[in-house]
Image (cartoon, rainbow, N blue to C red):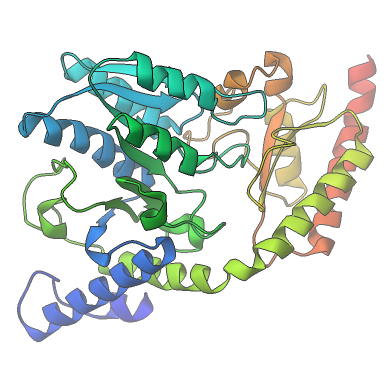
Length: 367
């Protein structure tokens, strides 16, 4: 990234500096494609995961309509990221004849495949499906292979928000048979403000930002060469470090054990389902998420209440609501995340801080 920042040249220019910038972008495209097992030509760089989700849904629906092959249904799960749910609602509002259908999840936060199958087979017309690979709040991994298999039986196209999964577990765009997938650089250790949409060749996709011909005409705007270079480097590192995921899972299980030992009444959401190795979503009775986030911050630990993409707001989680979690308990939920460099010592220190905060809260709770 530092080298790219120090360089000059627009990647669309034919002079030497422009060709060097283009080479950096194309190297990164190959690195990102290697992380998720897709063709490099299928990678479209964006400003992040939210833009990529918007491009996938709005672009697919508009592109199909322009080709005379309209979607009549957009099937999403109840636990999708806000950028998917908001763009789904926008698509429904601006496309006559299109209906958004929400698929429920189980109490463990896994897409209900029986209901998903019923939704696909009872509906009429062509469907576009958008189901995430792993949830950003609970870490629960979704059965994407089964989702794709069911969707293909009715001729539906499938988009997968893989922002949380890429780099955290093996993910093959090609083997899964996906049509679209969303990625974000900062979730694999890269810079913020850059992501990608992977779109299989010849699927419908209308650009949402018009202007120049960048990204093979799919997204106009001068490329952020330094950020894209950082994305590529991070993707390559994440591919190399996938074998550390088992160690991270062991660390997560250890963290859950010591937190539960301190507070046996605490609830860890998604237990019993496959979950990402780096995510714990936990709630302690009588301790609001807002209070915990502030108290832990003062102790030197940064955690999130629900999604970390909500402009600093602490609000009730639509994910936990979809899982049937009691609203009072849901308001207490925080998300604890860590990475390959996190140590047991750091988790022990976190647990000690957690214990101090809960102890301070006990007199007030009793009163």
